[in-house]
Length: 411
Image (tube, rainbow, N blue to C red; front, side, top):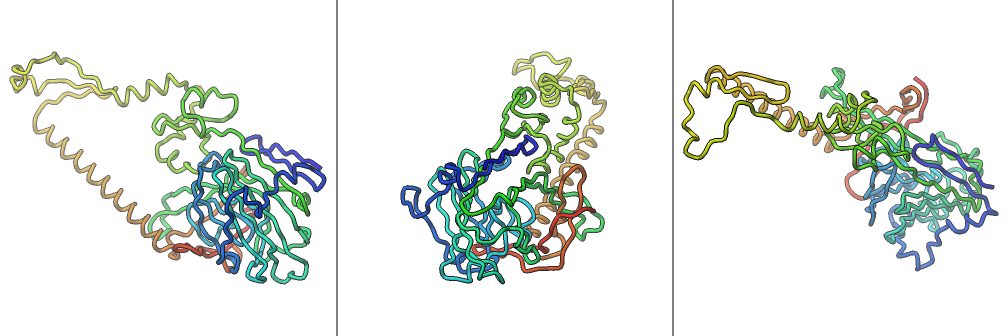
């Protein structure tokens, strides 16, 4: 009745429990028990189809090593964990006890409710039905996010086996997924940039284990992101494949939601040096941040300002390995002018990037912010786009609808 999976031994292990296991009863959170905390029945979600709502958490929830302070509850039996709400909620970055084409608006008895008591956040889809299969019965199940990082799925009423649920109108999934976004230059794009989402890991549950009175428990494993020092990053026996980025002062294997920063600050180059030690990183940091000055003697206040012009022209400054001699005031002026021009150009470029980001956030339907979603396996297959289908819209706040629902497939 119990099934243990070492999923790459990297992010999560999970265990499934059947109707006869005592643990199944222990994992079910009775939403009618006031001892668990105040339960909120979301009126709009409970009477809507393909809707989603963002909810703030009272605690920081660790998901794939990242701490989340808000999540998005969808009527389709899953929780979206990404920062940007868009129509592709079902593709990546989700916690899905049973993702399907559920329509809570079909019956007044159908509800989407949740509670947050500071230690656990629970979402329950109660008596929800599938369009076209309403006569099969109602589904009741829940997902619980624990402050420790543990995730549990509990199933009370599953009237239909999952292999009989069609995925034509909506993906049918059960498990976890996370992804990161990378922005690269693209001459074909109107704004010269292309945003790509990579699904770097997915945990898929054996759907034959999902039945009435069953449960699944995910235990979070240590990740590189939890190490706050170079020594722990490179020597910890709890994690593997970790590299230290001296610029960001961050430990990572390069595959997480901070991937863009990892690339922007050339951390991938440091990652390639497998023989580097923390002492090497310390020397690199000191040589780049501690300039040395040669041929200078201490001066008292009266001596300051009494340096001859010749002495000024021939004073030598050494910064790292770069040595230069200032031979004339004119060359200094030209050098300073070049530096100022370079700084100004960098600021203009930064301003342009900020304006582009604001435009993408404010005009998500335009062609420039469209996402090309890919999934990472041993290779990076692109996802085949299906014909446009009705996507999820955000209930509270401004929705960001983009593209269509996609499913993974080889290039």
